[in-house]
Image (cartoon, rainbow, N blue to C red; front, side):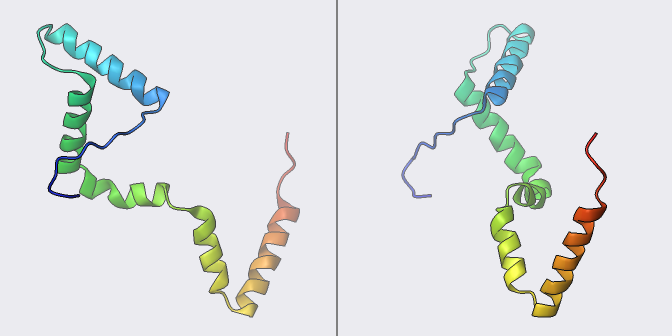
Length: 102
């Protein structure tokens, strides 16, 4: 990021929007005079998460959001011809053995 103060915008999924709304509602029940809005709350949550949890979670996050197609293509392209033939035979065998759908 640059030295200039920049605004990043993120679109939250409906599930995330509902979660934020529910959490804010619960906080206002505890303390009705909060000086807190959705943007401030999300900023707080992200800052806290980055400081306390991100380092522990980043490998899992990267794995979850990796491009599986690109990863598979890369791995397939690095196989030798013998390894590729073995993989094809294995996949064919699995397809024949897989149980029927109920």
